[in-house]
Length: 97
Image 1: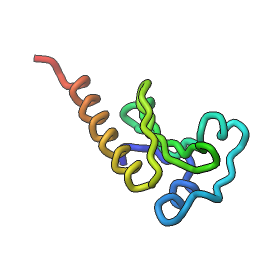
Image 2: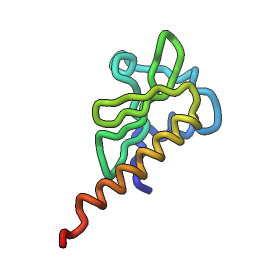
Image 3: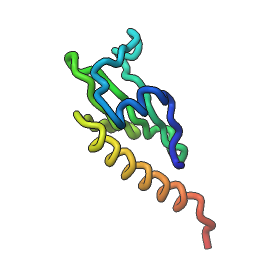
Image 4: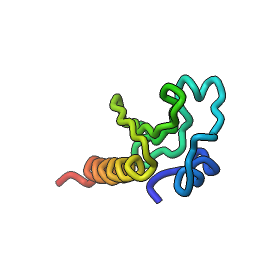
């Protein structure tokens, strides 16, 4: 597994049902609730955020952010980014000839 789950209960809930009932702390309302982070690149993270009272998913990588309404589209994007980050890490750590 090339990512680490940081909030297992909400991560698992998002996969099977709505996250509309997830309660945020004041800090999470401002910054979002981190659900997962890449092992290859710690700047790649998956968040649950609140946008005008609606829960959405935010895939953040470096200084970019892409917001998704549904879990599956957010997860597909996160996995694509994970694979890209892993390839970049391998390319940067490959022995130079």
